[in-house]
Image (tube, rainbow, N blue to C red; front, side, top):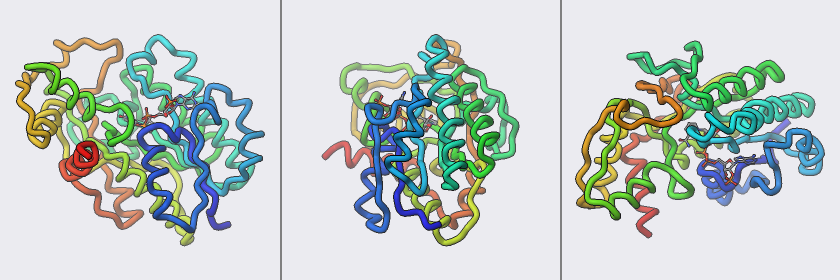
Length: 290
Ligand SMILES: NC(=O)c1ccc[n+]([C@@H]2O[C@H](COP(=O)([O-])OP(=O)(O)OC[C@H]3O[C@@H](n4cnc5c(N)ncnc54)[C@H](OP(=O)(O)O)[C@@H]3O)[C@@H](O)[C@H]2O)c1
């Protein structure tokens, strides 16, 4: 069955919003974008009725409990949203025989690798948020073996809360900032991830088999310090940036030291060339300056 009506959860988040922005460029699809007030992932028992009313041909679950540090103390809520709700959505999609796409994180990995993490690497999260996302992955796959999981990392967008917007604000407010320089990853522009999501849906409509785990992030790896330095250079700001070590910036949730994702599987499956993160950052900051 061809996908026409796409139900997108979390429409006010970075990725959900970017999918909403793309809707006008995809007139062949009917996007139904729902935010927390319309579909609250902390109440999985309410999903079935709501989904029956919408009758989607595909569910794209961008909503998640993403407050990494708060997750250490709000354990029940973050588990319900990131694991139980994802399992419930996967199961509903199986019963309706429609595709289910959901997103996960580089934080499912242990951070000890020295080579990019492939989709086949065993998960071993270092914080509670990562363990809720890993549980969501496993429970969704168990409920529905056709589930599509896209792991991503270091997400930014012109909409919502993210490192880029926080850095731009702090660099304007302060003379100097300490930034962690010993964590490596791949920034991801939510707009590019939204476009890859649509390519996946189009590929399914063209009859291609898409299921299982994929990784998506922009090309190129960096540290938070170099990410901040690039933001500073593009914005032309004066704030002094001091590189610091993770041990000098304690947070409630531990962060993986290395969480670079290998994206070759999605690049091959969709025949796409993913833009470099610096080009994506320029596009995002250009939008922010308007
Ligand atoms: N952000 C990152 O750096 C990052 C990194 C790796 C993976 N990911 C994953 O990528 C996906 C997209 O993330 P994102 O960056 O778009 O996240 P985001 O900007 O934090 O947005 C998450 C959205 O989920 C919604 N939400 C939270 N709790 C909810 C609930 N109980 N019911 C319904 N909606 C709820 C939020 O609603 P409100 O707007 O009402 O708060 C928000 O709109 C998620 O699966 C996330 O785990 C993100």
